[in-house]
Length: 286
Image (cartoon, rainbow, N blue to C red):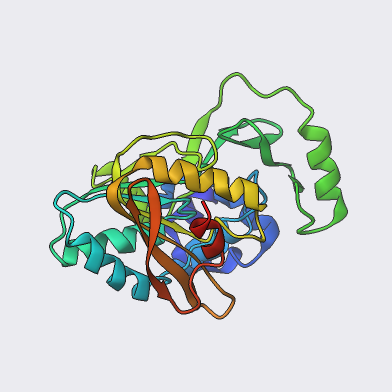
């Protein structure tokens, strides 16, 4: 049945609409995910897979066409562009950004990162999936699921609380990057490098000429002090005269963002898109 499911896209599109089956099949066919090119499957399967920061991996194409055009205007002026797309979630927007720049004859060193992209799987009577920090994300046995979110019914949360107290396995059967196949293929071809980067803790000095941080540094997610810490780390990672793009997409699909340039160790405002970034005052007073 698993072999049939992984090769029969029409069947996958049907079962991917059923949440209980989604958790089962996302692991069972995960090794074949790079070969699946059906957007309904990719969107449905990963939407409800919640990682350890309680967010899901949404796969939505064509989110930043306006921002890509403006970004190109800044990047084309850079001699040797080194780009970092931070907290990419499924990474489809990174893949699109890379393709867009390539269509404009921009050759760059392109990096993508997401702290919560990797899950580690231990198979058995109870199959368990852990984050890169070894925190239990979800588990299942028979038809019972353990998830740290009440997606189906309260029992799923109770089972998760019990199972997360079990000792973390020393070895895992395999690892899975929760990334869109288009990004995975570019990583495998060394067109994009996926790096381990924690926006709040990782320090990289003077490396990038363009940094994109979309839909992560939101006031609804983090307090002002956490956001300031992230901004300081981002600024350290940028070369002098590098450009930062930061913002969020609202519920209507409108991108409110701002572009900033690093000059003498400070962020200088370049341009607002729509309402600009909601953290513009934090950036201004950093």
